[in-house]
Image 1 (tube, rainbow, N blue to C red):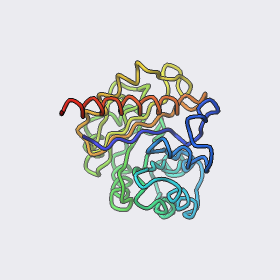
Image 2: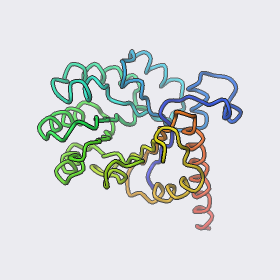
Image 3: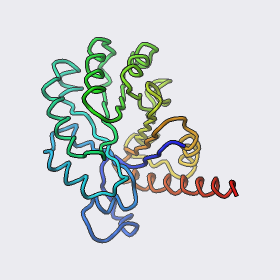
Length: 250
């Protein structure tokens, strides 16, 4: 079975859920007591010093993993052009996470169509320099093509399975299938809607049955605090499924 990581975009703990977490420690330490992964989105908007990443890595358990979003300077402003200097700075900073750096997430703007040459250059650089798994969340229709899928696979990059999907293939994993990376943004109201028990229960079997080395499920429906409740719910469902599977062996 694949190694499964469940978490949220950021480690905010809504007031209603605080009784389920430790009383003492930093917010990240409290969060990591219950969850085994988190997605750092703040790196998209601005840099963090290497020592900040080192402090975060030191404050979580050994099996905890971080996903870090590539800066928008590379994806949205430079649009995958002339990125060598900012990419080098970013990779040096996030190397402070050490072995707890699990994934670098490349989120592309909806207006950025597939430019094979530019994409080839970026993902080739990431595959040789990042020393971790790579996930890409494209949002332009031209990225959902056999050509794009082959390009991502060639460089060991997984295509995110997003909800709600913008295109027919957007809700399904693509690219390198050694990593499957789900990003659930909230549906029907993006960033706001909670998924709840029935939707989570429908996702859980797919996570467990995935033929991959690692599966990530990140909840990004943070606007009203639903993400962490959904992440806790999915974690509980996965634990129950695992318990039943072990009992069936005896």
